[in-house]
Length: 437
Image (cartoon, rainbow, N blue to C red):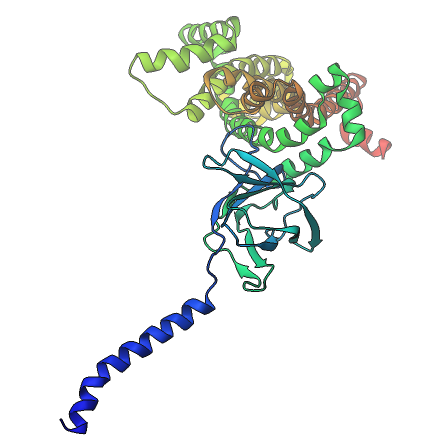
């Protein structure tokens, strides 16, 4: 056999030997055993969702990994996610052994914290097969939440493994919380808040922690109430004015229609009118969205009261004003538009301001039919917390509007009375203003 033929027959054998040697070398350089992750979880801490983990709220991390027989683990390093605070005072380490992993073995270790790294040095290397269970208490994940990744690496006593990473550790999903929730949790830890809430009455009606969390929620209802009034009040003004002119009309039919409407609306509770509109109309096949329907009901109710305000204002105008306008050649319409109504509006501004306050407060009745205004939002929080504090927050939102407007109303009424006194004395308004200046 020729030498070239011999080489062709030996080549496959040599290739097989080389592959086997490489495999042996690779196997020799790889650790015989490796720790594997079993679980890495956080403790749910949400009051609303039993499975949710909230940021900036006390939780804990449970880490569990396998230990193989004779592995001799000498060190384990856990990297806690950045931005997460934790405490090692109550750190718990247990080696679970046995076929059912129900035998708990204490572990002799020394912990060291280096930034976000929790370094665990085992005084007696772990060589018994089982699961190493580690629980880190007093864990506070970042306020903004996110996917929290715990990292882990280990070393063996014989140096065969040095700082090898444990792969496949699942992330811990954390839900972020708002700034107000974070502030509320901070308040819970303050001594003065604990002392305040130790009083049952104060905790029930003015819990600082619930006050902080309910404020932004009730604020949403405040904007809804303002939006209803901002639309209903301007619409009620022309309605009330038309009704007032109808009641003062010489035509009996117009007077009868306006009087009947005003007496019915003013003689029945607004609460009943809301129920008729929101539950009666759907039965009749008329479906209107809640917000526009709420605006319409409030407008129709307020228009009846404004009718009486405008009517009283018109009747308070001296008949001499009408006679003077007629003597100048004005007809009835011109007299009403250019003489009567301008003076009437100046006189009824205080009453209109009071009607605005009343209308704003009456929006609370819309909570009974599911419109998410001030009281509805507050009632939702009260139902979940059992504290009356959200109602106190809602009351403050009402006072923010009503108190300044009440002061404006008193000021306008004083100016109106002062103006009437000047007229009775025969002092022109312009000269009186000059004297005051």
